[in-house]
Amino acid sequence: DTAVSQTPKYLVTQMGNDKSIKCEQNLGHDTMYWYKQDSKKFLKIMFSYNNKELIINETVPNRFSPKSPDKAHLNLHINSLELGDSAVYFCASSPGEGGGTDTQYFGPGTRLTVL
Amino acid sequence: SQELEQSPQSLIVQEGKNLTINCTSSKTLYGLYWYKQKYGEGLIFLMMLQKGGEEKSHEKITAKLDEKKQQSSLHITASQPSHAGIYLCGADNTGTASKLTFGTGTRLQVTL
Image (cartoon, rainbow over all chains, first blue to last red; front, side, top):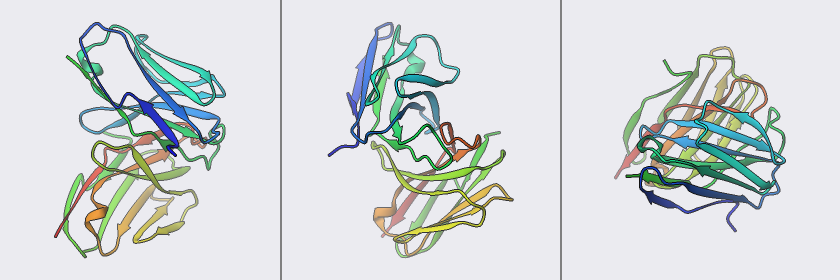
């Protein structure tokens, strides 16, 4: 059984479109994250939610809006897509509120290509 | 400069050889996480180090943490083609582990 799953795995879209990426975890974890990995493989956190509440919001354009309908899901909606949004987006989850021994488990990633 | 530096950036080793990857943080380390990423796949958690001097092993992979130097090393013994991939270290610089800073990764190729 997949622990952290993301859909879709690949997403190709035109500039200016609005798209969503879904993430689900069946680990019973309280905290979920979104990361962006750019073309140089640099992985950077975007958002973090704990029990449906936003706890980390890095410097990310307002076009990106995370939504957590319940603690097992954290979706990422992107408005007015730009070329620079092309990247691999990873979802992750961790058991607790982010204590010193919390371990994050990652999904398989969604490769977004904006044309 | 990056907050978390990994070296080398890429590595090609012959099967059976040993290798070491280093990860150095410019900030205080409260925890250090090692992940492996295969091409087109997600990150697989390898191990987490928290205490200075801590050393953990999993199969042929050993990781150590030098808290004073704010540095961790990942050592692979008798490398195999299955070890190929990108190794990423993630640092907890806040003590909460909720916000990890990642290094740029080390791409490992293992030749026959």
